[in-house]
Length: 160
Length: 181
Image 1 (cartoon, rainbow over the protein chains, first blue to last red):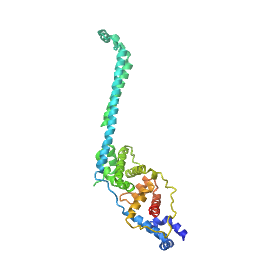
Image 2: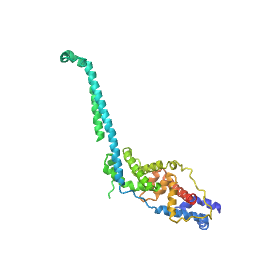
Image 3: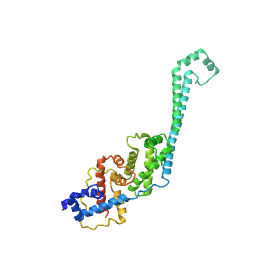
Image 4: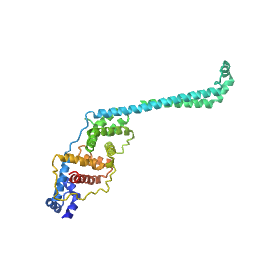
């Protein structure tokens, strides 16, 4: 008898929800055994309670609250992008200024005293030659400037 | 109400269409909140967690590749959120769970299973189940919840879902027969 109860124990829930139809011998046992019969009854009660449980509904403001949170997160992301944009712009300006200073220095503009002779020198062929000899520096400055503009464009696009 | 096809809704959400995301929230909030509220009895906390699910959905949508259904993916997030809330019940292995030992000897006093207190006892018992069992028991009896979505979200082969469901209910019965009598 006890062995039969132990054998049936794993099947109690399936018998209770109707997904397992017990063999005649098992059904007779369940009908006559207080332990197994009680277990099936309790399993049926649980089954009924589970099936009849109410489904809780979210509050009426649920969607609005979610959308507010989403908006706030988006705003925070935008702030980070804005900060990145500002830093990129500052870095870009610094690089351009440094490039311009370097160029001026290499061309001989950046001296302690700048007099009119220097400007006149720039206009003559010798100065033109100097400019040509600094093509690499000028190209690098142009690349840096382009990078700064691309960063600016990217930051603006991301913000939109 | 006309329901937008899933892939179109996802695509619109990805493009930053807030109306589409609002539609998505409206479409799933009942199931998401219902499922969470059945595991977390504190209503305010359940609502916070449900909102958290949708924030995670919003963040994750750009990376959602559509390999599973949207509903499956959302239920997976629900399971993660509930698991984070109840970490002690999240990492329980179900593989060795063959809790078939009879817990109760015949003839012992039986507290009436039909009384009103069963609701509270049952709720307490459900909250003590491992998270995957909770999700199964809670989701299985919810209208609109698809069996296969639950199985996929829980990484369970369809063939074993019924077995796990029976085990979960057996655990409930044992808890109600013993510790929660």
